[in-house]
Image 1 (cartoon, rainbow, N blue to C red):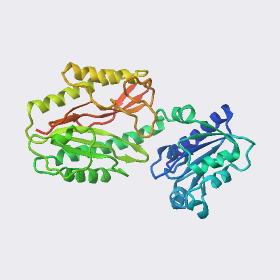
Image 2 (image 1 turned 90 degrees about the horizontal axis):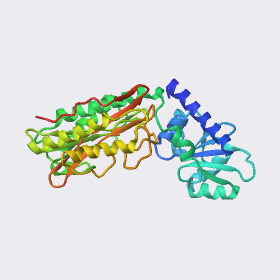
Image 3 (image 1 turned 90 degrees about the vertical axis):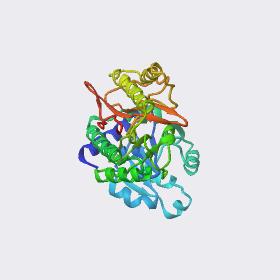
Image 4 (image 1 turned 120 degrees about the vertical axis):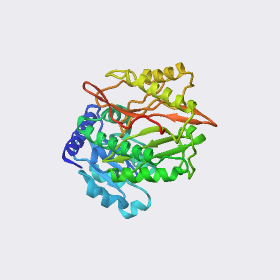
Length: 366
């Protein structure tokens, strides 16, 4: 973890400890699992681990199973506590959690963020502890937006996704398969600095009407709409950019769909400002499409990026935009049996406005 991110991580842990004390809690258990937990990464330096234990007083500890020992030890700035081989066989991290906490008051109050395993639930009962869910009260507000220290990392991964879209643009033509296009994209993104390509959709023809799609080895035909949705990651940050192209010479209908979605995106971008309602932005995008004679799309307008808890751009959302809000804007048109169009931008709200981080043109092949 680089110096500025490390300092930010330590400040965040201290903030959690302060919040715990203010709420009368003795500790918090931040649940992990897998190798891509961004909350663990932001708080400990390691994206791998079972439980990050944060006492209200004292030092935090990252509890890991033996399989994660090496990775966590190389990346975590907090002390790593390895579950014993015997406890590991039972998938029981509770003894190691107790090791981090040491002596505990009778009937402690323990906060948690994420689902507790059965062995940890049994351990909590034995302690006669009071469990308090701290996800909404402490963790979500802590990660509602990116800190300015993180903005360069978000800009970096967005440059990578633009490289992926450029590779798509150069690869798409009649006769080429969607898998061949996907391979070119993945190679370009990894060469550009991605540590993972994440979700990667290349859908052609009638399959472009699927809002999400699996990888399929399908030949692109003349005039096909080709929907390309890319989500590479690096340094724990992620981007998510969609463009829709036309292979070869397209119909007036296909071009009209792209133009309508583009107008919907522009309508949203023209309404973004500090304090703007996420729910209203969603409504603006749908009104724009309706004015062009197209139906509402079956998903939200957008979602947060890079592990942030908000804003969710959906109908009825109470989220408002704040400095550091990072999210997608991605309206779409999907006509089953014909094809679909989605255009997706990544937006960062700044002190004096906002940045559209995704720079690849909203274009189609001619």
